[in-house]
Length: 199
Image (cartoon, rainbow, N blue to C red; front, side, top):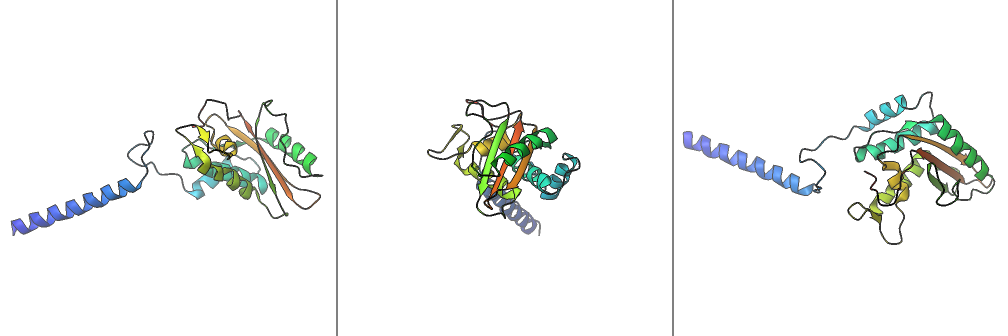
């Protein structure tokens, strides 16, 4: 009876250990990720945090902030806070784009005090989450080890979203005269410094 119990116990331990090791092998290894997985906050928690970091926000503003904080949570970065001054700056620039919906930045290339992401969508149904998801989708082109984008691809919108030292964001959405949508977000402090990693 004792031998049977011992054999059963060894079998159970072996099966559990093998299953645990198989699961660990399926997870990608990274030198900066601890062996014990830290749970990413739930979408509900991120939404609640975003509401607290966006005083008197509703509609587009909350969607923009929530989308950004979802992306940042996946990299275990601190959530961004909504900044009304950045939002006003973004709204002024979006207002200037209403007539032509041209996809252009609010400052000359290389001269910036703010980070900025811009988005254009054909038709008027594009939402703030569509813009944030399009920017975040550039993650697939970003090589962390080389700290660069894949050849011929953009990833600077993504890296700005997850830039560690960025603390605040403000965004705007406008339906242009031609019926398309222009959206932009501004960030402070800005990211995308040459030679630095986002996180």
